[in-house]
Image (cartoon, rainbow, N blue to C red; front, side, top):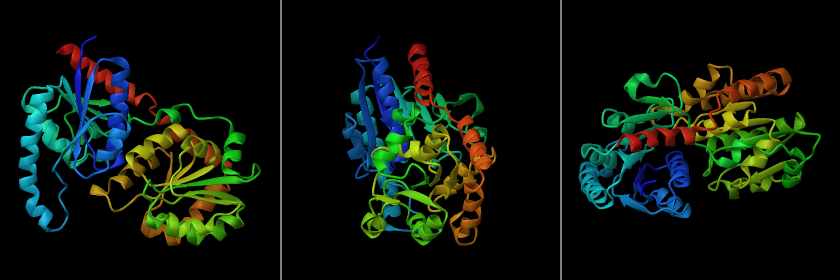
Length: 364
């Protein structure tokens, strides 16, 4: 067992950070003497989340390109050059055996430098529509781990390995004790439960929808667990009652998933991968404010397998009640959606990704 050194790079959002941490944890389990260094973007959430997970991190001055002409965009070439220089110093000092990139602009300069020096690199692409950074790096890396079929349109086919996306370990074995979950949330055992997920910060359009539809849910006899997000909690906590539980953040996702009969969620790659493992009927309302509209594409990939329902934000006012009532009133539809989404689950994704990293270590 060698004293291996690994650099993991990616960030900007939780969707890039949490897979990197999951991969690091699995590598650490297999190689207890290994050294780890994360490289992220300065001032982004990885600078806080990675140390919380027990790993060292260094920040690059890189930022993403804005969609319109701004001062930040004029600074972009300068920041890229500074990030490449800093990446060179990091790689020279740390001398990694393998570098793993999980997407996001922070991983671009680091993997470009490492691959240029002949260090084996692995990419992990979470979405069904590849991100810009990963597309730019595709010819420089040894392996590309993906979660969806059809990724040959973005990457060289011979480098692709379908592994799935890493998910939180507590979700792989979900609690079967529904009564304990009902007690935790202080909800009624005889009522159906709707779980609303808008991401850790929240989703304004989903929150507006739920606020408008509370009487509609009440008329159907449904109780609600509503994770509205940190940005919106003060605005919506007034709706908490016996049948509506409003949270800024859910610390016990395992219990929330156990109790849920139907789930409404955004369609980020991490959420989609988790919900496949959970195996419950899901209505996806994708965020339209993301690069390449990749959330809609993630959700559509499941809809194609009759494994989920999809409502675009602009259709919510006209379509939501009809679609929701249809699935709520049909237990056979619920069972079919739950079974089909479960078939797409890849609970061993983290292990498979690390298996690919092991092959590169052994080849060296």
